[in-house]
Figure 1 (spheres, rainbow, N blue to C red):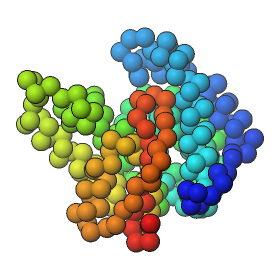
Figure 2 (figure 1 turned 135 degrees about the vertical axis):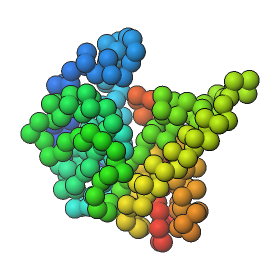
Figure 3 (figure 1 turned 90 degrees about the horizontal axis):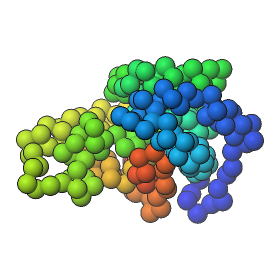
Figure 4 (figure 1 turned 180 degrees about the vertical axis):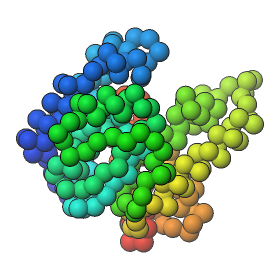
Length: 238
């Protein structure tokens, strides 16, 4: 679907399935994973917007992905539930959804039993095969994993305490993560990422002399609140 075409809507059965998965989540346990304290209050605030904005984003992607394709998800969690449900239930797509936190993977899979997708514990770089869609949202700028790089990305770096050596190490790791996933992307392909992560995707494309086009519109998210955008990669992407 071209961005100017009418947006498709999820089937009522898919919406009901998504609502059921959100209802079954163990938010007390998830709160301990997502927050150092105040996890219960966090999910009381974020649960509704997470489901609603996730459904809205799933409907946007519904018209951009082809039936029967494959998607690779890096750092998939609660926010990705509506999109994973849309891909598998409406487009018969295969999804490989990776998460480095084993405890979260267990909780998510318990809530998603009987549905045609599950979460995998581990590094997405280990995924086998080729994918026509890469989801990598708020991974390359994760403040817990990449504190110096994240601070710089968000314009919050303090020059008095900024650690350039740590930043150099973090930048090398981020480049490796991006390259390890992007090399699995079938061209032309689609990348869903946060606006702050565009430079890493664009850098990889430039280095490999591959054209890329960033769609003008971005979309809100609920948990980390980074706006999400789409990047079309490969020949004929304009």
